[in-house]
Structures are given as structure tokens and as C-alpha cells.
Length: 134
Image (tube, rainbow, N blue to C red; front, side, top):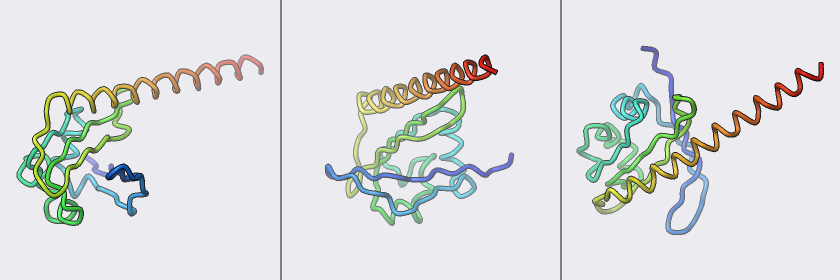
């Protein structure tokens, strides 16, 4: 399988502050377990992210740079294709994620997916109307 996917981190929401994330890219070839889980539509829920099967590969660089201890990531899909990931990370101490935490983030991801579907439909309708004119 050709591995060329990446996740680009754009915004960091921390302590009620929104800031740009420092040009961070996570490459599939460096984190194959994580990307496999996310691409298969799985929620990655890692209370102890340093030792979790899907996230331990982040330990040597990403987690240590940002002192991340726990992680809850949910993929956002559009027509089956991975489009984005909502990443919730807890620093300094291990967080025991609840089912409610996972469900809440999953619902947010579902809302984004629905918006993507609606946006695609609007674009398709506009293209159809445009082609009818000519």
C-alpha cells in the first residue's frame, strides 16, 4: 500500500485560548498503527497514550514535545473518505476518558460529516444548474 497521507494540525484550543498550531504534520509512514485505526473509522481512545497500541508510536517525539498523556481522536469522513480528525489531548496527567466523552466527540464529528455531505450536494446542484444554462 502506498503511504502518503498526513494530518496537518491547524489550531490548538488550550485553556480557553485558540492559537495557531506550530506547523505540525503527522505522516502516515511514521505512525502506521494510528493511521490504520483512524482510516478504518475507529475512535482512538487512549487513557494512557504512551502505552496504547495505536498511539505509543507518538511517544518518542510528538507526545514528549507537548507533554501529552491521554488522547481521544475521532475521524471525520465524507462519503467514506477520511477528511479530518478531531483530536482531544490531555497533558500533564493521564485522563480516564468516559463513554460520554467519546460519544460527545463522535457527535461533533458526525455533524461535520453531515455538513460536508450537504456542501457536496449544494455544489453538485450548482454545477447541474450551470450546465443546464449552456
